[in-house]
Image (cartoon, rainbow, N blue to C red; front, top):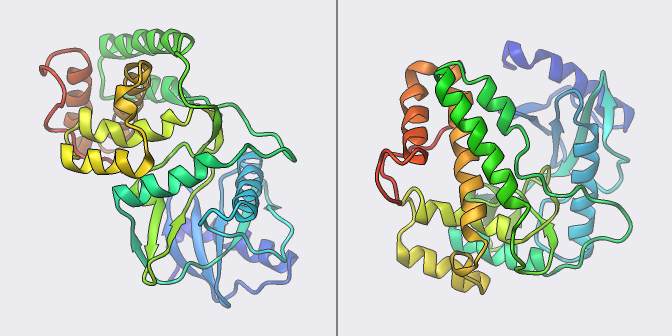
Length: 299
C-alpha cells in the first residue's frame, strides 16, 4: 500500500510514465526520501523529484549518459525515454533497475572515484561549479534547537571557511566531482561489479572534495581506523590528508555535517538536539582535539 504522504508523487509518476509509454499503475515504493523512488514493471526504476529540481534532474541524466560513454560503472538511464519528464513542476527520471547488490565498501568507493575522476569533463554540456556551501546558511538559520549565540557563531564560521575556500591551494587537476561520494552511493553487485549512484550533486571542482568526504570519517569522527583509511588512499592512489588544502575542505565538511544535524534536530529535537549540540561544541573547541568521539550518523 502506498503511504498517504506519497499520494501526490504517485499521481505525478503515473502521469509522467503515461507520457513516455510506460505503465506505472502497479509501481511499488522503493524509498520515500528527498526523492520518491518507485519500481515499475520491466526492470525500470523511477525517481520523482521535488518542484524546482528540473535543472538538477537534467544534469543527473546528462551525467549518467556521459559516464556510460566513458565506461564508468554507474546507474544507467532508460535509453528510449526523453527525460526528465515534468508533471506539475516535478521532474521524473527513469532508470534501469540495478541487479541484486549490497552496499559497497570504502575501497569500492575509492576504486570507482579513481575511474570517475580520470575522465575529462564533458564538452557537450555545461556543468555547474562546485558550491560546497549550498544550503548551509539556510540550515543554520532554521536550527531552532540552537541558541541565537550559537547560530551567530556558526554563521561567522561559515564566513571564515568561505573566505578560506577562496585561497584553496593547487592540487589535483579540476574534474567532475560527484559531491556525495560515500559508501551509500556505491554498490557491489552479487557478480562482483561496482556501480556508482546518485549524480544530483555532480559539478566541476577539486577532486579532493570527494576524497575529504571519507577522510573526515577518519580524522574527525574516528569512524574509520588508520588501516581502513590507508587502504582507501592506496585504492585511490592519493592520501588527501597530506595535501596543503586539506584543512580547508575538512573544516567545510565538518560545518556541513553540523548544520545538517542542526536541521534534523529542528524537526526531531528529542532524538537529535544533543547530537547537534555535541557537534557544535567540538567545532568550538570544547571537546579537545580530533578525532572527536560521540558523533553519530543522522538521516
